[in-house]
Length: 141
Image (cartoon, rainbow, N blue to C red; front, top):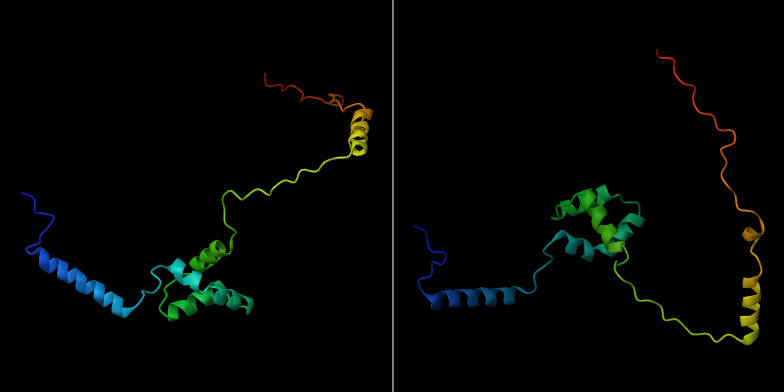
């Protein structure tokens, strides 16, 4: 037989216990960062300064580990890359401005388009087999 998933004898005592936990957290104040990303994000400018002063990711990881943040140099590097990267996704398109062309510019454009291009004046390059030789047949027999 299965054991019940809920083992509550008194709903009122459960409610009172949770309410006391809520009050306890409110008195303690806001909770600190809960993961490494939040820690590195909070120290982003400090770590950039450390790097500018010649600290390596290994040095930074050691300093953080000594202060209670267990992190590897690879994680420091990866989090910093991600925090410094530009956001991905669709970027807003720049609005296009409609420019009215004067008749002179339209005529000049048409005249340029009607003139043959430098590439059109010369014959296109056609590949040739001139100078090609295949291998001599092998005498295996």
